[in-house]
Length: 255
Image (cartoon, rainbow, N blue to C red; front, side, top):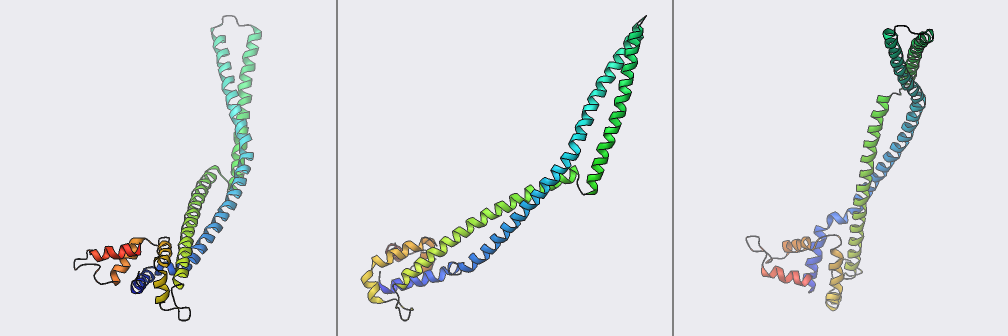
């Protein structure tokens, strides 16, 4: 590749790689956003711990009372069925024994006793719920908070993953561009850092340009490079904007 051609190539790359050159700013901004996202995630984890403690408090206060009430409901239903069965037997019996009549009364008393226990248990359960509600704890609020925490935590986790992936990709592009710039500097005058040294470029030839082109591929596509070259070199496009055979020559040289 001739010196002029190499100069055109490098100039084209410099122009279209401006976003990559400013990647350090983007890295800084994205790193700050990632740090903020992780902070939010930690806050959500802390809120989740507090929520779990509230759920445990609610369960320890409500579940035993609820289980007791459920058990009494079952016992009462069984007692009612037994009392109804005894009453029906008494109605159909012509000469019920005194012992059986006593059993009927016991069944009725059991129903009455269980009804009162059921009322007491229901009242205790209601009182416990009211006390917890005064502290801002209820089944409805706990369920709603749980859904919100799950949704927000998932959103924060996904955001962190996306930001980490984007930051990794951005750092890789920046590193590739830095490598490219280091290779370009080998072709520039050390004192001026402004012009390509013809003797070095000519002597090095493909040996020097190949690593440059290879490193370019790590932070921009070869098609983007060629598009930049085509904008600077007359004759690579015709008046209709189509690539000419000369474009293919340049493409082969750069490859």
